[in-house]
Length: 331
Image (cartoon, rainbow, N blue to C red; front, side):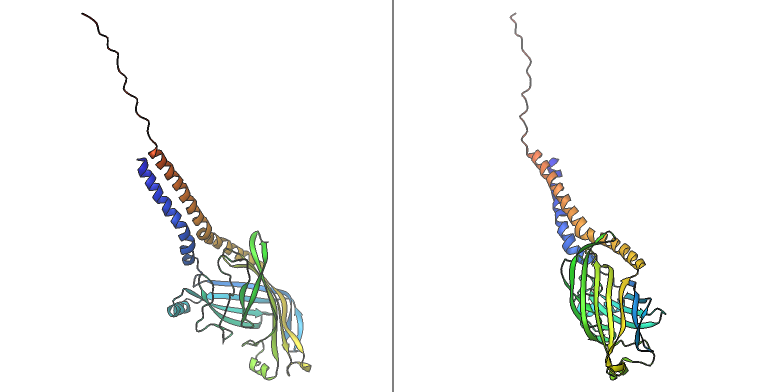
């Protein structure tokens, strides 16, 4: 009976020990994915900010500039790209909408971002663009990979349409959560004018004909949860200028927009709540279950060996039966 129990426990020990690496290296890449239909929005603000008055072509300080960013999963496009590439992909149709203090549009930049659902690596496909211009991304954008590492990453900048290193600057605590802090600085670079201009009748083609160019510089900062790879906070010190041409008196330059952009407090709280729930699922697949199965396998193996050892232990010889004394007498 002990030998049968020992063999059963040995089989269970082998099963759970083998399940441990399978959970981490096989199940995790297949189960931890960005859903193709995900929708997310975020509101950021610069308080105060500098904004160009196109009526006077002079910069003025305003109390607030609002940036609304939306990410909408395009399921139909994801299926189309999957059919052509054989990869599990997500297609995000993104929009960055900048509004002045009066709520009127300052700029509006659409994007289409195609990436691997698990690794977040860009997947190149028709339709990948920024503001209608075809692009070929390298590096990440919007989100870091699951199990983010303490290293620099290549991060795509939609204004310049190029990628540059975003540097790991250390581990910090943000609202009680341990996060990795990343920072990227883009030096002053000539960038395209937005397709949609804030003043009716003015087109980017007309501005370019007058010899005026748009320049941009920024320092972007992200606080990233290392388990899910999701930023829980983001800030940007953003600067834009128009330079030269007939549009500016004397061919000088003028600030088009400048400000320290920060996530609005209620969106920080909502993001933290979402990330906290998601990190539990990732930890189940990468830590809790693999280590739990490995520990359970070790315990079952120890019990199995103990029972086997007891079953093989030699039993003592049985004592000889006791004999009754015989009394003989003479008759």
